[in-house]
Image 1 (cartoon, helix red, strand yellow):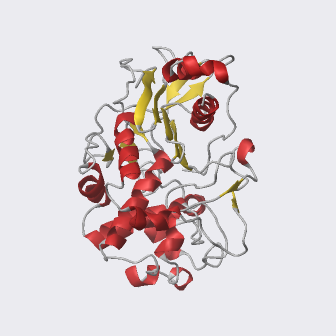
Image 2 (image 1 turned 90 degrees about the vertical axis):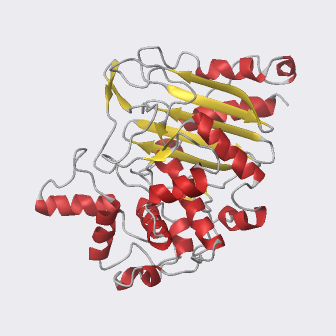
Length: 382
């Protein structure tokens, strides 16, 4: 999964629903026009859930889960979350820290003594907040295939253990750990492996037992090809001329800690409730996750040049599995997901009591911009 982030600029707001006149219009009627017309019964689409003051005010599915049967998307449809997975990986690590099985300052060399010198001093905290300097495993895949020929494919996907081996073959980091911020899927694959090694359970099993079951997220799962199945699964699609083609899997779709969770807007609403109510962690235990990364000089991180044009050079703040930069001065926790066939977004404005979740099984939509449009509309209607 390359770093392809959400557009943060809102789509043009629906005329006549903001300001004082919106007070007499229900949130559902305000929000619906943003999403209507984006999908038909015959195209892939999206699922949306909007919450205001802990209450669901809008939830709807649009379009088809997959082209073979045309089965409709609903609020129980499970999408690949891609990088929205990272908040679950971070929560798993935080639970292990709470249990005193691990520390944020534990070094990679303490967990993997065989790891090369360049990475031995990398801390768990640096892995969580993208300041580790680990090489990008997709770059390492490309380099190996240039010399050895084709190795990985959608049918023969790279596994987490192979990612670790690629990293262990390297002799230097991208930068001195802690000196820069650089979004790292490698770091979150390694965090998933750390969860498994420290807990003694496979990553997906740990998430199931410690997060999904306690929160009654009954359909949420870490997909392991050939070992389990995703219920009510949506399949990913890309635009193909005037139509769409199924593009559900790539050579990197099997990695887990950086993007392997499938979930629905209904289950993610339970996750949102748990974060609000401190169900899994106390407010104090959650605090480290909500502290932006510190690195080098006192400046914000900037997304790299391979981010979409709308985000190049945009400053961000990142905690553990969450972007934390505010929006128009309002506190916000957010994340995007972008992978083969899927785009996803979650935005949480905790002090304003607003949450918007948008999951798409097509790559021509911008769930971040759509979510921002709904947020703008509800903030302006107050």
